[in-house]
Image (cartoon, rainbow, N blue to C red; front, top):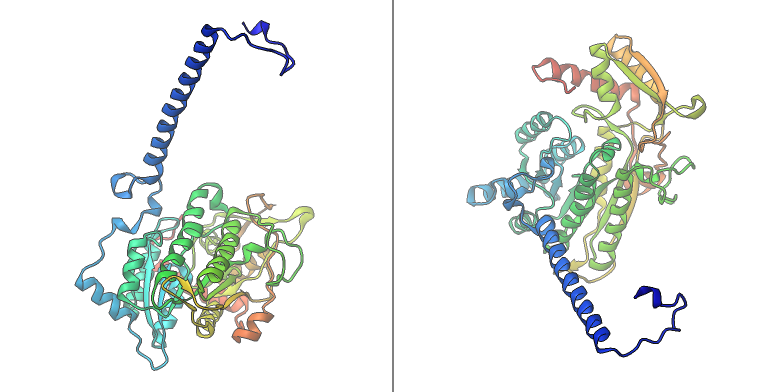
Length: 433
């Protein structure tokens, strides 16, 4: 029958044959039935894969991102411990929920807050992105300082709601995130889960809290991406991310602005520049360079095109902590209540760096002197997996508004790191890798 249909549409007049009409209706109803059937199948699959509860799935797709619902929390004893940890012990102190408290920066910030008399409660999911035993050691350190770390995930809205019911936090220091530039190639969903969904989950809890806390959170120097203008300023473009990690941090800044605008949340983003120091992250170059040099392994040192230098604005952890505390101390109160904005709220973005970029090859030379071991170097081209050639912070805004003034050069900071590293791993702790 198709051969009788002309190629030019609109010129064919179908005969009104009852057979043809009935057959057309049958085909039409058949198509609708098939479409309806497959729609139900498709919706069913969506329900199964995206809306089933974590408790009904005995084997999570990503074990390192398990919800806090898998952990025990709640009850009078637990609440008592939460309140005790978050209790303010100084006259003008603040009460802070620190997410990612068992992480590198989180441990140092939590300790500094507690020592000056602030109330501090930690939250961490202890994922296995890097050696969890290091995180447990940090947790033990915090416990001795008087900081209780609740084990759980920032995506667990039930737990977050409970924490804000038990403690009227004045501030949140949000440091929980999926870190690392290169790991995004292997596990991209973990970055969306932690850095975007996790941030939204936290902001939802904060907007509904009464009182709403002021929020300071960790963005990243990675947001500057392929920007070639140096030093990087907060006013520079950040719309050319070079990695998924950078893209999620940039998305986080835009999401934060939205919650500030709609709900009156006071929000401050801190763009960290290559933080290093004792209790650091094993996935950072200075850390695994130290490990591999001591083991006699060859280390890969990247160079840019035409033998160009790869440099980083290495910033010592104590300087970063000072910047974090200054941001908390100058944060204004959120203006919302019951999820509704009552007036304009503070929104800030600051670079926290050292302003002195150092070539990675110079970092290796410093480690050689401190370790008294010659490194086996393998110079290779910078891979196209998200790493950028250099980072360099313009910190004039943070200096002016936060009083931020980094004071530790790389030689001094690395000496402190190496001293900690040798002490920690000679004490029976196994170095990762």
